[in-house]
Each structure stands twice: as C-alpha cells, then as structure tokens.
Image 1 (tube, rainbow, N blue to C red):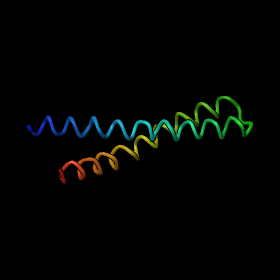
Image 2 (image 1 turned 180 degrees about the vertical axis):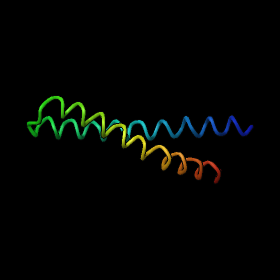
Image 3 (image 1 turned 90 degrees about the vertical axis):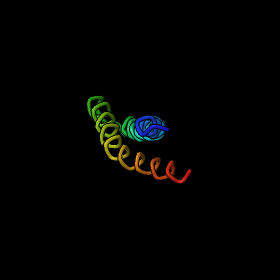
Length: 73
C-alpha cells in the first residue's frame, strides 16, 4: 500500500477508538455531575471540557498504538 493510504487507514482506525473513549468519559462525567446536584452550566461545561481534554490525551496515545499494531501485520 501507498504510505498516504496507510496513514489514512491508521487515522480512521484510531478515530474509531479514541472518539468513543472521549465521549464515554464525557458521559460518565455528565451523569456523575447530574446526580451530584450541580448547576446545569457546570454540568454541560464540565462534560465539554472533559470530552476535549480526553480527546487531546487519547488521540496521540491511540494513534501510536494503532500504528504499532499495524506495523506488526
């Protein structure tokens, strides 16, 4: 395969992993804050913040992991 095609496939596979992880952590935060009795601004703002931060953290980690697994094949 061509290098660009391999990179595109690695990016696609990675996105299928890190996006659900990020959204899952945001949902966990949302429900924890919702049942904790916090104001709506704190709940929605906090869930958005957690989603963005977990996305920033998960993207390079998952992409490197998928790339490493792809090279073994």
